[in-house]
Length: 208
Length: 197
Image (tube, rainbow over all chains, first blue to last red):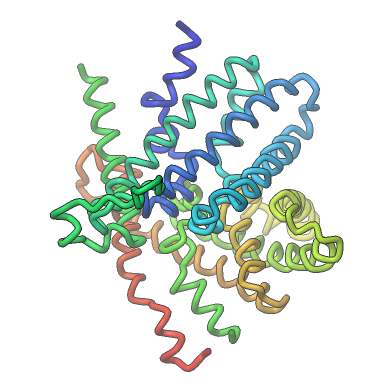
């Protein structure tokens, strides 16, 4: 039961994007296309899973006085690794993510979970926490990207597979795109409205 | 690219907050009153400027000669973290008054995307050392402009009847979105029209 709780708290109750408001730079920056959002989520998931695992395994070895630099080294090495892997295998996603990919290092979610959770809990719990948190992050990011791409350009871009080009055109929206959604202001506006919706939703649940 | 063009690019056209979304966490977190916003802005400007020059030097004098470019991310974040620590100590010794004003913001800056962001952008754009310096300064100034404007708006918003669900962070995001819409008036064509290229 408690294991399930570690896993599921990241999805809604402590959703990193809408409730904890962590790691917003990449969320707003890469949410122009669904495929970028998925690439970013995969990167964050990989880094968060392994950083939580390594840090909780080393939690008794790392001296308290230098714990933050030690965490940063672990996270930065993992980010360099994922950068090289993405550059080699999915160069289109690598180019689309641009500066936001190395910026996973300073993504508050990863350092935050290392500090708040992995440094105090067992390896298995930390892994579950990382999986839950990164799925919550992925859901939030994909939701924003879906809204922005659907209204902004009337398409949904996934990865090309076989005959499928990877781009789905949505009939009516494709002819009547609201360009501002895929530009910078759209990201901020959508984030504001979604945050308001989640706040309203959680306060309504509390009142019941 | 001339220095004025770099300044205009990072302050207005590619403003770190309104078009690149770098440094979003302090932008939302520390913009509740204008005094804190100015302190945060000044600290960030200081750190981006110094960090731009130092990371540039490390990249071209240490990483490139030994062809260790792939260590860029690890090196830069460590340099920035130690730089922030060092600056904190130096400022504390030299000017206690300045330390009092900026001290609480400095530790927060290590994990500010804007600092690592400008360090990486300087390298990607292939700037020379003076251009990197200008880039760092301009990015910091753009961040300061955004956070000071935002804090003034939020101070006014506190007095307005805002619906309960929108109070606080959501309305801040929506205001930022509207400001970003206004900033779209600054376009790349500005630089061409002013004959700065």
